[in-house]
Image 1 (cartoon, rainbow, N blue to C red):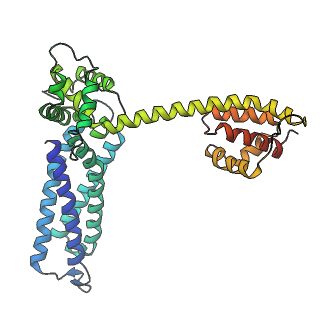
Image 2 (cartoon, helix red, strand yellow):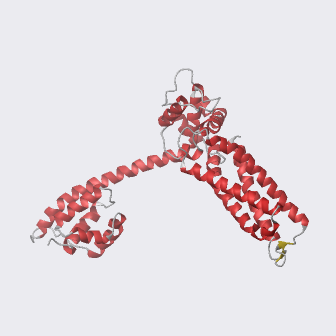
Length: 359
């Protein structure tokens, strides 16, 4: 079953679950429920509608499980947590569905419990669809972001830097509508036999790394598949993966830039704190600069910055020290990842030296 068919079946599955629960709440509600007989007296026609919705829901469930469970045996690696949760929820849903059918057919004296089973089925349906449909929709590019001219230009630029080898399709062929369509079909029909879609798309990668990954997976084909990924298909899958992950790659760039900015701030802070002891000594001389203590500002910095990693009582337990000692402590914390700017460090060190002086 293709990813697109599976996704739309999943959407229909959820819609039917919602309809069934709403019908059940009405048909087994106060309007039709006979408390004495412990059964509903709803119109037969509406009960048949509810039954029909349930039958279609059950058929879709069987079809989806028929396609899902054989795939579990095809995974070459340990199942990811999301896939395990998906399977457990699917099995739980099946148990609830069978139990509900048994009550309706053979054990009508338990009819009063049907609304609870209906709600359980709806909850499981929501979990199943939440775990699968968003990633399938992303792979299918329902928002049409792949064809955006800016995105196509980005993909062309990235692909131009990758060596696919002799006989590979041109960049123009790869970014054409048919080329991207082929890449999508290969991805959803061949790659997901070993990895679910979320696992494939969750890790940020550059274009070259996407290519290396596809080549590595192509060299380790699925032993259960009679049609593994061919060498000539690698460029198409690579191009499509690059095309559908612009946000991930942009996020990676932002993360690198943020790390560089943080490193620069840390270096400046450490350098500034190295000068703090000299400033403290100079403050003892009336001719030197004064190292003033802004208690309110320092307390705010201490509360907002230092408590990200530990409680304030750990500061007290650390013991006292002069400006030089506390400057070193702050420098060490900055090197450990504390986000304290140079100016904040210069305010914090004298405050700590005054509040927790050397004993």
